[in-house]
Length: 331
Image (cartoon, rainbow, N blue to C red; front, side):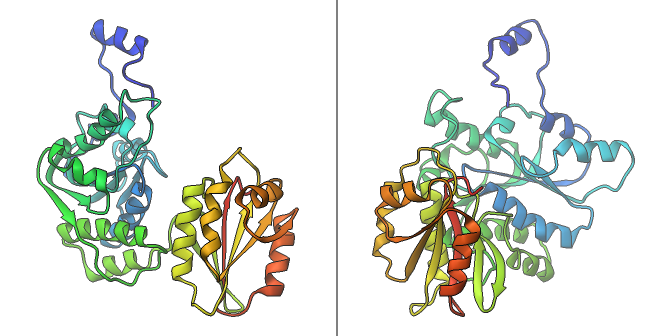
């Protein structure tokens, strides 16, 4: 994560030092593994994990990691210790990691979505996007692109090598929300190019989601519980509510738990939720009152999450949905 433009890095380069990285070091010990790289501003962890679920069916020794989970060098070390070799390597790659990995060769790759991020590091949004697009240069066969990203479509012609834009179809999957259907089809397209079996596709369709990200916890007394505690920004809450409403029948209620610990957030952005008649909001935690007042949304306020849940258990009926998407840190 160290910026390559840092004075001490540039000084070392002028003196002839070779600058490498964890991803680059690991890639130097690969032989004939099929390496798939996934990047994007959002969605890359989910796509990596969906694809990883399928890869582990095809190949029990598959490696899934990189920017999430296990560092790539862990796999490299296992190879040097003569442990089992993977046929498939699925890597999540951040923009930072794409800056300095000249030895990394990908057979397939994907860009999930482009939106503004990391502008404290890059001189401009254009520079950030072009860093993401660099993944095409490392890819020998095909880079898969999500057509739902308007900015990605604008940069499509700036991606080196062969690209393919995916189309979204109707498909039953475990994950919640339209954005996750897009994530699934990015992963499914990559799996199709690899020639994976029906069992692998089934594993990808059944993937339950990353922990705390619109994660389907399960049903209790006929009530569906969804954990989205990683939603600590207003945009995330709005996406989560949209996804959870898709799971809520018209004559049922969606209980939304809002609050936790405040980060001086613009709760007023949630005012748009007042248009949903089957949405019942329950505020909790240190900033329950603040969230209530700033959002101007109606709902009971509780000091503790346990108290809020006790109230929900009294109110909720079978086939209702309960969503923890707090906006603040959920405590």
